[in-house]
Image 1: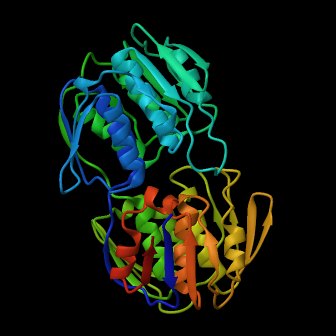
Image 2 (image 1 turned 120 degrees about the vertical axis):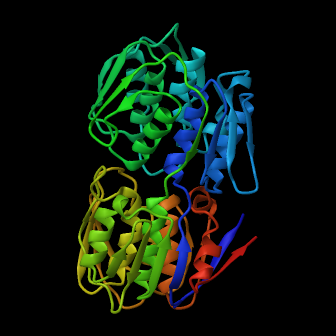
Length: 417
């Protein structure tokens, strides 16, 4: 199993390019199943989760290929079975997003209940209840969701809680349904908007994405299209926080500053000097950061996927900061690892109270989930000594060549096999 060895006290400075968004490309690949033709997807990040999704579609018989520039070509007309097996789905919760398009286009689906990071319960009942409201026959047996339909029917669906994958799954299912579907209390994330834009590029009729009410007018079929995935706002934010923690400077290219308003605001409060352009963000941290208070919530509020990184920022800041997590109940597993590195952190319910220290100290640590892994990398870059991070398969699920990208910024990181 690979590990990362990080040599601390690095000065982070330079230019880095953001990859395509992991949380966009996975549902976009799934949405290609809706198309009666061939789609071409560019700006695809080289991630383990993307590999799993490609393998999953290939297992179904879909003709899918990737070129040397990581552009995907997908022809779903070759599909031979609408089954997403446990051995693939167990590694990635996002696999559940194939359920909606399989059922809508091919009238049946057998999808294993999902696995993935153990950061909290993300029940699939909202997906199932929504599809039932659209007329699907669904049974859960032997660990699989088994669904059939003659043709899904438009419906008005109100989500009990905001769910990104639930919004995406039902949006895709409604694309080929008969009539109009209205999703209320829908997720507003940029990745939901990206999926909507992709569906419309294929001839779908989705409006309202980016608001809490999305309207989908069903069409009979979709055609092929070329589409470029939006940049990864979480990867972008991770590089910005790393520079802030290490009192460095960084420019992130091929990104979108409008997707990071809440993150940039908190970095500004911490003392960072930030400049932006149409597709770039630069950050300079001339002095030690100031502690900030964070409260995660659905977009456009502060993203839960940036919570762990800001815990590290507060851990080396002047003052006391709090971080309150409202999305996932088990997303503080990185705290014990940061405490091993000397961070002064106390947990009180769904809030952590962090008293800043001037310097962290290297220690052997375990990556517990995808974003927690990134926080440990940032902490290792600031700490004195050499930090070794185990279980970095979590990192490879969501960060493309993280050691190479940080290496170009002056970090000393080795991947140890």
